[in-house]
Length: 256
Image 1 (cartoon, rainbow, N blue to C red):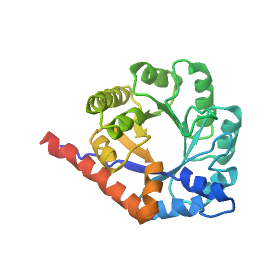
Image 2 (cartoon, helix red, strand yellow):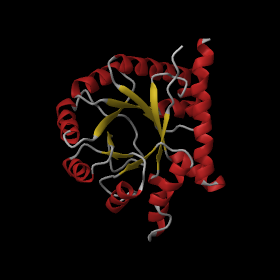
Image 3 (tube, rainbow, N blue to C red):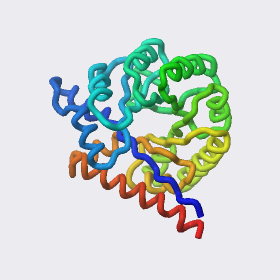
Image 4 (cartoon, helix red, strand yellow):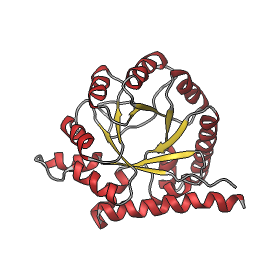
């Protein structure tokens, strides 16, 4: 049996910047948080530069790009301003997400079907300078097919609805959402897309979704920063790494 490839952990450090910005100044520093996360086992760092700069700021992105030794994934809206910033900064990857000023956090996936031409242009402009682009979408066949047509090599499945159902202890809804994720991941992989996932994941849900062999990377932020309040960021990242690896190891056991 072929070895099951490991699954990568991207740590989103946005809410370290949220805490810093609540009082102003420079503490806590999201770049220091990124360094701690990497030392504890993160395979990459994700940061969302929003239009309103509510947490990550432009100088954070520049310092992250210059200061960390793991890939930087820039979450961003597909706007002219953000595309220009990404082309100038040249992170390893960019994840295109929907963005509304009124939302507390990213509330859903991109409408890749309805925004196909605009997204195709943004993906091409980013790819032109060597940035690997992912689209943050719901695990729906039409959205996945649109991602293929747009030319993005990667999708990140929005796991928010599943995680919300788990939190609400709605077993029926959670089961239905996980079926959607499972089928979406399989469809995307069969179409040649690399499959990532994120939004709302905790230790238990990350362990479960890591059992899907199509999953290549999980991006997790708010939960880890919240756990860091109680036990430190390094401890939270190490525990997440263990949970994901435990889930990954289950693939081989299930097939034997």
